[in-house]
Image (cartoon, one colour):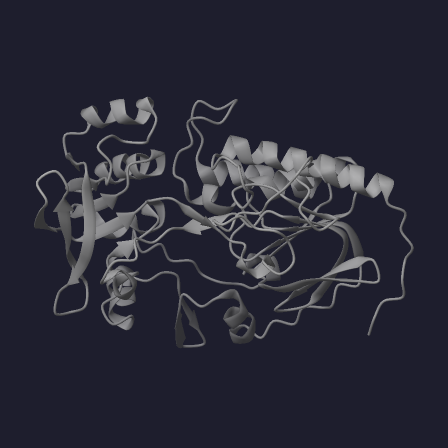
Length: 378
C-alpha cells in the first residue's frame, strides 16, 4: 500500500479485541489476516494480483534495461543488490510479498554477527534501506509469470508489467513444508499456522501445539510460551535437530511440554470447522493418542520456491537450484542465492553470504560480456 502511495488505516487486532472478533466473524469463524476493507467491501488475504485489481492500480511500463534483476527480496536478494549497486550496476528487486522474506517474520535473531539480538523486521528494514540508499529499485507485490531471453536480454514478465535485464538472480527463498496428513489443508488458517509472530496473538492465554524439532520450532515454541498458557512440542525424532543453545533454553520454560519420537497422523476439527485436536502415534509403544489444543504451529522445514523455473534451469530432486562456481545456474547470466539454491544453509547470515557470492558472479559475467542495446520490442 505504502509503495503505491495509497492512504490506509492499519488496525492491530492484537490490541483491538473488537476488531479481532469482527475478523473472525466475517471469515466464517476463521482467524485469517490480513483482511482489507475497501469502500465497504471486505477481502480476506487477497494475493497481490487481486490487490492490483481491487485498488485499481495503474503502474507504468518500465522500459529501462537493468544490469541486474533480482527475483526475491529476502536477505540473499537484498545483499546481492547492495553489492551490485556498489559495483555501479543498475539493480531491480522484484518481491512477491513483503521485503525481507522469511527472516522478516522472525521475532528475534540471536546469531547474526554484530547483534546480540535483533528482530527480523528491524534487520530486514535496515538492509532494504541500505539497498535503496545505494540506488537499487525495490518493487513489492508482483508475481513472476515468466523469465525469457530475447535479443540477448532477459524479459521478466510479472502480473503488472514487463522488466528487462542483462542478468537475473533468483533469490526466491522457500516456503513452509506441510505434513500432508488428513485434516491439514482444510484447517490452514483455521487453527493451523506457520508463523507464530504473525498469528500467535490469537492464542494469548490458550494452549497451542508446535510441530517440529529444529531451531525454528524451538524458537517459536519459546516465543509462544511467553504469552500462551501451555505449549506442547511434537517431534518425530528421538532427539532435537536444533542446536544445543535452543535445547538448553527449554528447561527454563515451565509451560512447555515435549513429546519426542512421535508422528502426527491427523488433525481434527470441531463442529465449527476449527482445529480442535491432533492425533499422534508414539512410535516406541506404537500407540495412538489425541492431544487437544486451541491452535497448532508447524515448523518442519522449508521447500524451495523454484517451480516456475524448472523449464529454464537445472533443479535437484528436491527442487533446489543447481549452481556452479559463483552461484551460476545452468543458464548463462542466471544466478541463484539463498534458500532456493542447492547446498545453501537456511540462516540469515548464510543468506547474506549467498548474495555476496552471486554478486561476484554477476560482476564476472557482465565484465566478460559485451552488450549491444537492441530496439525495445513492442
